[in-house]
Length: 146
Image 1 (cartoon, rainbow, N blue to C red):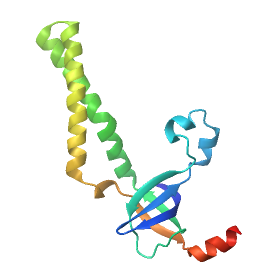
Image 2 (image 1 turned 120 degrees about the vertical axis):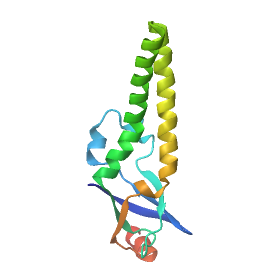
Image 3 (image 1 turned 30 degrees about the vertical axis):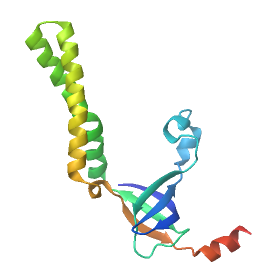
């Protein structure tokens, strides 16, 4: 199970915004700006968990099978489409140019299939479990920063 701690930075009707700080290893990585952008925190909109207040720390947990399914949809489906398209293009056209056209067509079909599958699964299938760690009322937060 992949687990990260986040801080609730905004509460809206039905959802909340949380900021997840990067892992400690990210500060030593030379490519941190490529995957995190310019900001130190990543902000996500998640369903509002009961009892969570502004400024509270929450634990976000994503089960291994959900992480694996997300990776398969993002990488495996387009890769299989590309290979199948290349093989079909080679068999049907007997040339490298048709194999290339088949690979590109298969890649596009794989990307489209992954998008359609993700849309059919809906938003709830890959949401992390949210557990409250330490509720901190906004008034206590302001007094501790002074």
